[in-house]
Length: 196
Image (cartoon, rainbow, N blue to C red; front, side):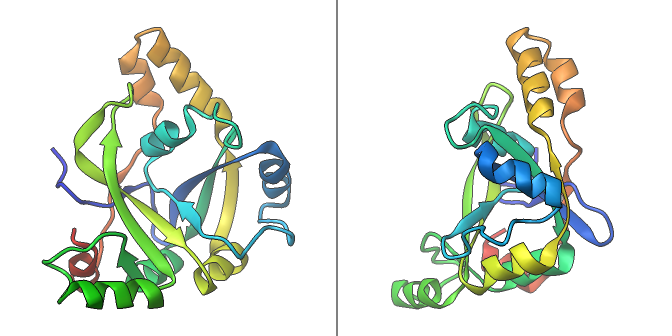
């Protein structure tokens, strides 16, 4: 079984894949241009998720209103790690924070929020280990949108194919279609700050 908190992702030497779900009016031009449009809202927190299954849970297999298109977004590992090193946990953790006030101060200052949520199986039941969500705000959003993205693919059809197999109870075939995700190597100092 994976460690309780552990980043698992599809990655290569220079990039890591994260997922986001959008309505068609954002997803279609983003895929066509291979980058987020100039009118993309950079003033709100945007959450990226390396776990395909967690993205499926969050978007309801790309069926929830406003989340009808799931995008696989390849970003620079250097950007992903920039975000991790400038992040704050969304919850107070005594092993990580000297005090609640120190944690609150970090939350106010950090442009990145980290949330650990139960990973999900193909039926969306919670598993006994966590998946990471990375919330980008302020300068982190600008870097993500304007500098880190190297490729964008619409994987909505894949989401629907996997969902169809799950509904027909062919879990083996569904599992085989999932993107391969491996433990992402996090520097020890960063891992300590992320409580993983």
